[in-house]
Length: 229
Image (cartoon, rainbow, N blue to C red; front, side):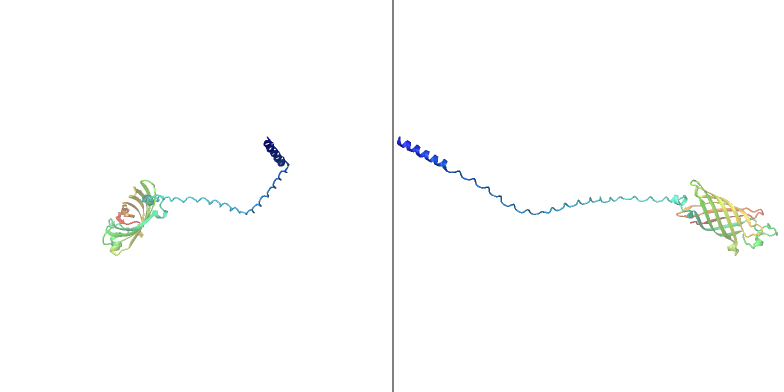
């Protein structure tokens, strides 16, 4: 019994002592550590976007221009005007009708008056013509030529002719015009001519026949061949 009472007393004393001691002071709040100095950082500007590369040009094969039609260049209006004028030399033969008959006004013949040995004479000449294109089977021609006859007989008998005519299907020609010679009695005559002009590459080779009527029956006829370019 005494022991129990002693234990209770000791317990009560300890409790009272505990309540009698002052409560501990709360600890002062600790200061936050100083903030670390901020490091200034410079933001690099974003690189400017590179311009879009232009697409590489696509090589396009250019088709070659079609070759000009040689026919159109030679005979069409696309041909330069100067090239419509063609020219070339002529070689030929001429025959005099009734050259030994007294058909002249003085009672003489051509043979006696001009001292000719034969009615057949060599003919040399040069001719030029201008072609007016018809864009079809018919063209118009204007022709001029000069010739010299009698050289093989040591004679120089010049003549000049001018004709207008037609060209059919680019090959056959027909024309009429005037022929002039230095003959005081009959200086001018009519002339009619016809012929064919085949092509040899870019060169033309005309073959023509002509007839020159005369009221005194001293007709003349002949033929020429040559080259035109």
